[in-house]
Image (cartoon, rainbow, N blue to C red; front, top):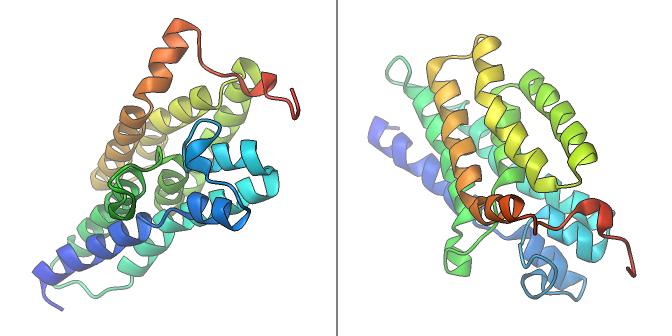
Length: 207
């Protein structure tokens, strides 16, 4: 397969896969349109709020695989030039996240990319994920805001990759994904600054 085809085929596949709104599909199977309730987001957090932790975790797993699987597949391709495979894998990961955030199937209005970004980060470095997962849990527990955990964990992934000896392209890929996650969280950041962000601690069933 030629270099040009590789550079476009797998990122395109990843974008189309990333565009599949698993949270919306799972919600509809359960009789709920997640875009009309809660935070109106199609991601795992809103699904968990509306439909319970089991379906939230299922959404998380599906969205995470959207980032991980395309990169794993791209990594098996033969490369014609040194570094070509790594470039294709990196572009594939970013494309998957863009697909989730701006899905062609939903008029380019998608989720915030945390779970799909998690899949990308997991492929790049499982140890880095473990470090950021600890920070995510700790920050959510202390602050009560899932958005705080997502922002902090994603922002520090490039640093962990650098410290763990990742390549410049891998660190750059993680930085791009983290920047996209922060961009999609701009409304959350505004609410955090204004003190109006919803706290996970206060969200009790029937309350």
